[in-house]
Image (tube, one colour):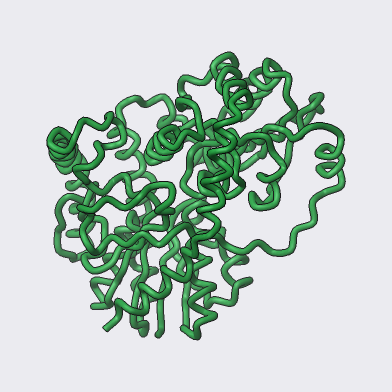
Length: 413
């Protein structure tokens, strides 16, 4: 098949999708990837045809948006920021670029949040599938929306109806104004069902971490997690020396999360780690964490592949992104989750339920004392570590990429 893939989002959104692209290429399909220039080198490295789309990524703009999002307590407000700043700002250019790039292809694969890319496929009459990383936004009577406790099947269903009512009123107008402006047909219920392909949505999540509910619509298919193979990695000698000169450290990895207060966040993390008496590695990430000065027993690192780094740790302190959560579990380690927004709270809740993380600590509420107490509770709980090892073995036995590709191939008729 000739398949066009619209790669939208942060590294945590794009790299797993590139793993699917790589597998499709191995199966003999012709694949073009539409993505911002930020990802051009990695896309070309795996051998896909690359087409630049969208406006240039601006890290400063992203950080400013995070500054607005992190203090928000109402989960609807961050969603509106993502809709306006992350999806629709520059959405018309993204749409027209995708429209041009998708011509001549037979199938489109888009992120569930990539409404402009989806609309380009619809305009061209292409079959289109979506992919997503979190099942927590699909209503099910077996659990409540992630911001509520499980209240039983009847009340859960009522809570989902309440959330649907609020989100539809808040979000649909933004998307439909955009869609009608480009000549498309309005949709309904974007925040829950309207963002997914009516035929197939691939959920790149582990059924070990979140068993599929019986009442999910058939179009939602759990595949298992998608991990992109890393190029051969040689760690710097300074990192190897640090690891060799003491017990396994705590690893702090906040991925693309951050804001403009990187130094303040770094100092807060250092203070928490010092209270525990542990060693630590702090990854810089998009949040640009770290200090120029050396700090005893703390190593500041740039990019290091999670698959290499995480198994060196005693536990992982992370933001709860879908990919980082899966990487921590694959490393068979417990977590301390510091969610910043959106689905990160869902993943934090899942790890707590599975007994491999303490109660989550929202970034807006993080203090050195609170973070230190959670780290200490994890390190003192041998059962938590044993459960993480068992879960990691099950997750590592899954083959999400093969499942995803076979579903794509079987669904095209």
